[in-house]
Length: 499
Image (cartoon, rainbow, N blue to C red; front, side, top):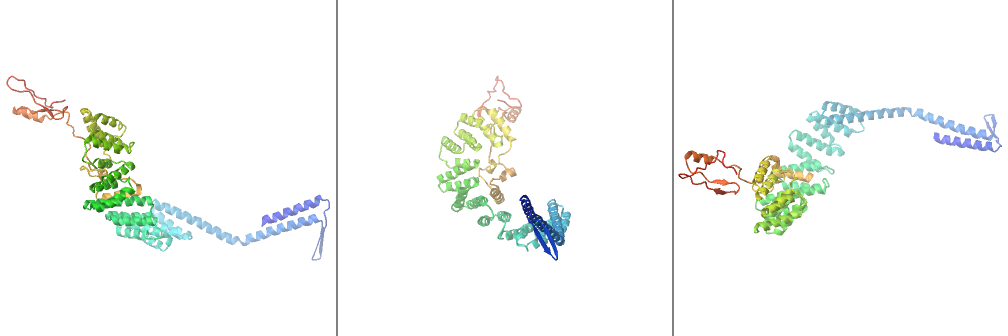
């Protein structure tokens, strides 16, 4: 309004200036209550403008005075709001830091100041009680939060965490189920239910929970798809273990087709298909898995698909698989393996040179020892064996047990594998984590020194010496010379005969 009065005054001033510039000031007369005022027109206009401005200023001042009490109340409310917000902020920080007593003090202060946000005050009170270790107060606060529809999900999560901390898994699961059934829920409720089903080895129940979570858009289709494929795989493995091969084939095929990078699904599906005489489909499943994620279990399963072939035919077939993903580390290892199977020592040596930059592992050292042995470099082979004895195991290689079975997991291992793969898309390795031995990776090569015990015993007894094995010929025995009358005696040293 003051801006409007100023505009009127400026217009009036312009009018006065315009009248003055014309040289005719004009005349204005005012009669009021017996008084008469005569002046020029310019002065009259200017007077009216000043009067309007004064009236406006007076009115604004009057309104400001009248509104003073309300302004003071608003200022006090704003100060309380700021103090309440500060108490809430500091309270949540103290609760997160584990300072329960200070968090509870700030929660009580916030309850007096932050009356506009009762939900946050209740949440702080619950978390402060939880940080203080007062389970009863925390449960009471979370139960009070259930009265607010928008706070029920947070309340159920707090109740679940409190019950879990107290070791009451049944109550925790009850709260998680209640949260999962809310119209608006969160992935943690699905994860809790899924883990409970997995711990019980209830694969069908876990699959149903996952399907419901995807339909309600609680989890993304990617996570749900990975969980579903892993669950179908373990269901197929259980059916296979009971001899129900035909029933196991359908879930295994579905899992291998949906997630070819999940190696257990492809290996189990290929094995089942091969038993049903579907070699082409088994090969296709392994090929898709190899292209998505090369794993030693894949090429070992591929190698064993046929048993009616010569070593050279098998080597050629392995080379075909390696060519489907030639840049991978596993493909370079397969190229060395197929050369060894085919009896081509020079090709094996060339393939081993492509692995020179790889970090030495027990499996890789064993492969290098076999390459050296195939080329006749037996001292080099022994050196690689000694090096491999202290080298670390490979995580993927540990997925195959000493009997050659891939992914020989129990229910607990499958439960961890399913949950980890669903959430991250990565394969964990329970056998590697436990340090269990995998398939043999270091070859058996005779030692550089022969055992001298047999020679010492023969010398003491005066008996003929046993044959001396020449390690260079691997098993070709050399008989000692005749020790008859007049013939020189051949006695090895106490350390035996060295090459």
